[in-house]
Image (cartoon, rainbow, N blue to C red):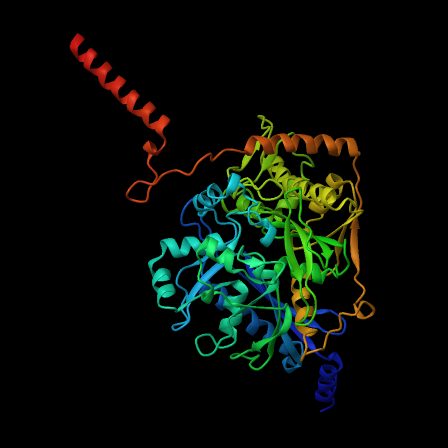
Length: 562
């Protein structure tokens, strides 16, 4: 009896809890935090399968994404029960997600009409070229004054345009007014709040600001942008703030709990790192790498290849805050590539040991431009290259070069950010899955020549979503007042190499980047079967035809001589 009383009093002592769904590119997680101390109490993670149906295409199954969320929720609730923590103390749930990834579904059946097209996907390159060609002066920044973004394969509008142009089921659903578009947050919130039976179709300002259909000044969908991409506005979700009650959970152990926070993953990490002041910045190392700097209440346009994006809007009546963002497509994804495609390591954690065994790339440079180059170049024609190879180079040097590539790319976006703001960062706050790699963190400090600071609790993305959910009006269990925010313990990595050596390695990297550019100079023309023909290139076609005639001629002459 006494044990039972002790257990129940333990449960009461914890106070309110807040949960977060963290749906990333490579995995889904569900995490539960103590709203008073920000302590992570329990979590569960499920890997997400990516499919690559054609070169440059990246897709995920919307149903698998949804199922992974349910599985993570159930398993985390089981773990909490085993820890004697009462799940009825969970007062709110926040959602954070991979941004730009594009879904379209039928609101009557609730079924997805196609796989989710992932942010990394390159199938829209010809669409992007066509759009840029019709702008005055072929300017990729033609829409930047409204969107803060260049016209690129990265953002949702061109993916949605591709779906409407190429998928018959999508075309039919749009015509019959059954289609719903959304990024991952919209799909999850719609499904979790009832789906076809009254689900809430909404998104938040941070996710909306990554579509190229959203005006970052008016904070709403822009009729002119929608007309530019020829997208009907009725298929778009309603835009809400990042912190308000959107709806209630309609099934599972957490039925009735409000979904009250929503932030794109990089905005969530900015909030989780407590970067609420103008000038504060963080860098997240996930599938890609994303450096965001809070610019306060006004959007700042970059002259150095960075994006202008909505950082957060923490309440319906609160003002929006903005950020400058440097986006790198391939960070953790390069380790996954070394594991899955080359078999150099069996699991991602082995990369640190392999690279540490040599402690240098031995002059080998790896530019992982698998999806072209993002910031600060925005060069879709670039492709991945490994250069500086000698007979001495082995897989350990390649592993080291891959980690250095993540650090060099961060240096490029940090340089751009310092140039735009005029106030150089004196240290870099970091988070994300890759920060558990101590060698990477030390390399980053060496290459940036400034200290790198990593919070002891690395789940800052999920924490940011939980903070938004817990502080929402009608929930109010998490205070975001500066004096109430929990102190964060962290690890610090100071630069340990000579700055001259750092600059030399960085200059070699820049040289390698130049060699990766203009690889895919034009979009190949498919033949009638949808396959690319060798004759789609006129010079190549003429060369092959000429060679064939020469061979036939030579054979004819040889036969004549016989």
